[in-house]
Each structure stands twice: as structure tokens, then as C-alpha cells.
Amino acid sequence: MKEVISTGRAPQAIGPYSQAVRSNGLLFCSGQIALDPATGQLVEGGIEEQTVRVLENLKAVLEAGGASLATVLKTTIFVKDMGDFAKVNEIYARYFPTDPPARATVEAARLPRDVKVEIEAVASVE
Image (cartoon, rainbow, N blue to C red; front, side, top):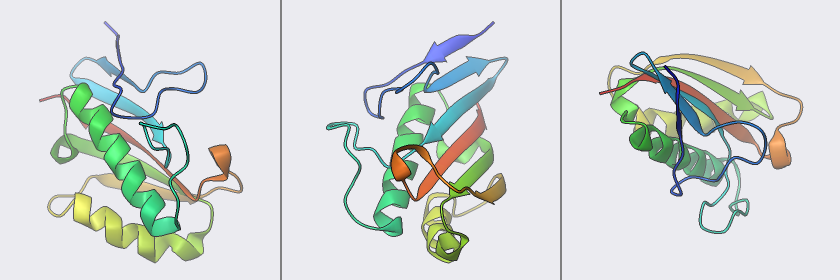
């Protein structure tokens, strides 16, 4: 069984996809970018501000689907510039301070809305 998850605490999907899908005890979260859910606009600032907003958006989607940052099993981080990886990693570590999930990080030539970072996740449902 597949259940579509949606929350107003994260940016609404801007295409033919869902914020997340829950199935068989797992939550598959679409990639989140640095859009402010209240305005739909890209947050101001650099990689640090964008990474915080992305992780806050991801946290909101996880919670709407019955999961949490603590139950994340795997993330994929897409960065526009691998030179920003250390800054992204520093902020990421604050959100996953113990028992962090498995992870892949990929440099992408271009991301939606020309953002600097996008993060997707798979979590177990509590």
C-alpha cells in the first residue's frame, strides 16, 4: 500500500511528485531545496542558510509522515559545488548528532531553482 504524504510546513511539490510516500514501514522523502514554505521563495544567503532551510523542510516532511530525523536510514545530498561540502557537512552533523544515516553526496551541475543544495531521505516510520 502506498500513502502520499503532504504538509504545509514544507514547500509544496512544484511538479508531478509527492513530498513523500509512505509504504511498508518506510517513508521516501523527495529532495528538499531551500524554499521558505511560507513564501515559496528561495531563502536569502549562502550555502549555510540554504542547508539549514533544506534540513528544516526535510524534518517537516519526515514528521508529517510519522518519522523523524532520528529514524532516517539513508540520505542523498546533491551540492552544486563540492567545495561547499565541508560547510554542508558541518550543518548536517548538527541535525544527525548520533548514529547518522547512510549517505551519498553528489556534485550536480544544476539543481532546481539554481539552489546550492538538495537533500532527499528514506526513513523508517515510528
